[in-house]
Amino acid sequence: MTFDASSQGTLGDYQVYLPPCYATASATRYPALYLLHGAGHDDAYWLDVGVVGAADDAIEQGKIAPLIIVMPDGGATFSAARGGVTFGDFLTDELIPRVDASYRTIAARGGRAIGGISMGGGVALSIAAKAPTLFVAVGGHSPVVNDPTSLATALQKGGERVWLDVGDGDSLRNGSVELAQELRVLGADVSFEMTTGNHVESYWQSHLGEYLNFYDQSFKTAR
Image 1 (tube, rainbow, N blue to C red):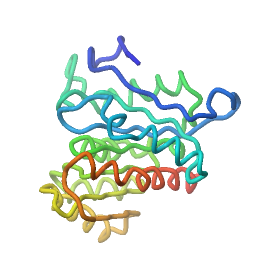
Image 2 (cartoon, helix red, strand yellow; image 1 turned 90 degrees about the vertical axis):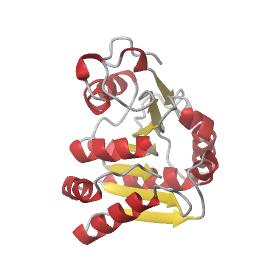
Image 3 (cartoon, helix red, strand yellow; image 1 turned 135 degrees about the horizontal axis):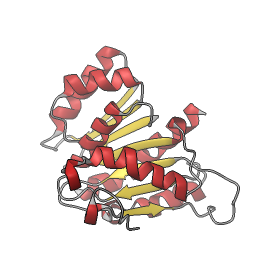
């Protein structure tokens, strides 16, 4: 989809995954998951990782409930665009209202989550920390974490469920470890996993089922 009127200009594009039942269950509303790509990629990256097939399979097998997945283009580095509007402000103030108006979403905190890979994971965590009334959960998948103490404080105050995972061979692992530790000390609702893997596409592909299950359980818990 192209969002020509957005403050992001040519970076206003986004992909939308609709569950297989969307067209036939015309009265049903669905939770929305916003997934951010890593640095140097675009709105098609989660498709390359395989999220569509993973979601279709999980829904068909009854492992997760149907959901909508929105994958926006944050540009190479999620930097501010027209008029200095940040990507975070674009997502919360422009994209979410557009998606809620265009699709049958559950347009409430309990029906909305955000997550991301690498730089996108760090951006997702920061957005959730600044907008706790919008998201019930946030996931950082091998995220870039620059200030774990401040981020943990904001996330704990916001009350979102937090998922963090990273490969044991990932050069970014320390940020996730420290953030998880800080969140636990504060008593936040955090799940942390460090398993075999590196900062590569195959690592995220192998954990898609876990990611989707986390977001699904977060939506169900909020109901």
